[in-house]
Amino acid sequence: MKLTSVSAAQLLALVALQPASGASNSSSKAPTLPLSSDSTFNFDFLIPLGLALTGGSDISPVLGVANNVEPGNMTSYYEEFYKLANYTKKQAENPENAYDPINVRDTWFSTANYFRRADFLIHQNWSNPDIMSLWAEQTSAFNKAIAALPSPGKRIHIPTRKQNFTIEAIWYGASTSKTAKLPTLVVGNGFDAAQEDSYHNFCAPAVLRGWNCITYEGPGQNTVRRYQDIGFIPQWEDVGTPVVDWLYENKAHVVDKDRLTILGNSLGSLLALRVAAFEPRIKAVVAIDGIWDFYKSAIAPLPADLAPLFEAGKKQEFDSKLLELRATNQLSTMAAWGLDQGLWSFYTHSPFEFITKAKEYEVCDFVKKIKVPVFIGNGEFDVFVTGQPATLKQALGILGTLHDFNGTAGYHCQTGATQEMVRTLFVWLNKTFPKHVTHYRRRLQPIALTYKSACT
Image: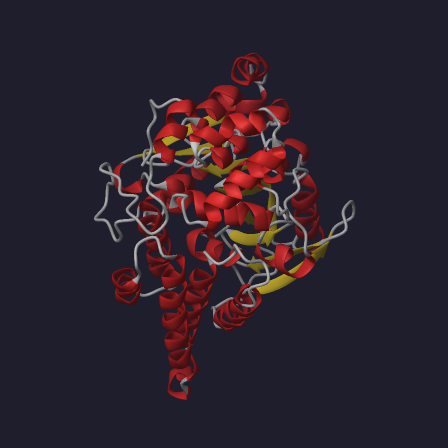
């Protein structure tokens, strides 16, 4: 899906030509067998399939959903995953299942995943009670699953000192030893995914490799947005620093402070970079499909004729036209979902305000403050961040390592190719520690030079 040679204006025009929701959004360049004639749904089916690697789904049931869902029909998507979630929940509740912790863990993990998928496309109507009830279901199921892990996961509530919200986190220890100091991964998602997804994509593989892992959610993200009514904030160091504080105060005896790494997924890559710019205790960053400018990602799926209205500051006209297109089902599936999720997660009913707020998320604003090595993922078919990982690499200079994920690993955030993604990032981490400190800090001057060229 990635078009590396396409300009921003061309991309706007190309995406705008996609059919309305409910019709085909097919791509002739898709690297995998399509699961839907709607390219957005095809990608969305790869997400739960990818979690099968670590017990978060079963393959045939997800393929069954893909077979039954009407392409582009968000209600159909919700209904089919909701049915699968409840079917799997009944299996998890069967007393005969309880004799084996592996049965318990995997069945509840799958149940949680299917409830999350049922929730994924329903955020257009904020008063929809399913937004809360489905999340309660997935949280209950996930808690049962992590309680059955060999080393149980633990939910944590971390108060903030500068802001008035509580960070929701989950800790996964890699050892039962109370003295073994291990490398630790701090994992945050971005625009839409849940920290429960991060267990499957990052923490389960990390723990198997001897890394502790903590996931977290801040404003705009699933738990904090739901239960605290707070949308995204650009000052993400006010989220990341309290997580690091908690590790230092509660897990200092098992955390190797010289190998404390923050990982960000999708928009979370930009947020992780922001944390690293202001939090000196972070020693490395992993940016899975590195975002440079979220505004470009937010506005790209919208019809091309709306961009001039936004740039001219015509808020009322921009909002009226875009909301009318959404109400009459005239947006592409990706644009419709992106608008719904953007309004909900940024806590505004105005598309103009959402896109305006998106402009506050740009690495250029703080890139000069980043002083640690950064792994930058770049997916060949990633239409969400086209060209941005290369810009990030240019700005970071010697600190940045750009890795191209091609072919079937080339979707956004390597969706559906978790093995390759995880294998690659841990190879990089293995090379980065412990030699990075002297090697990189000796060569900070090139950063300022490349920063200027990337930000002009």
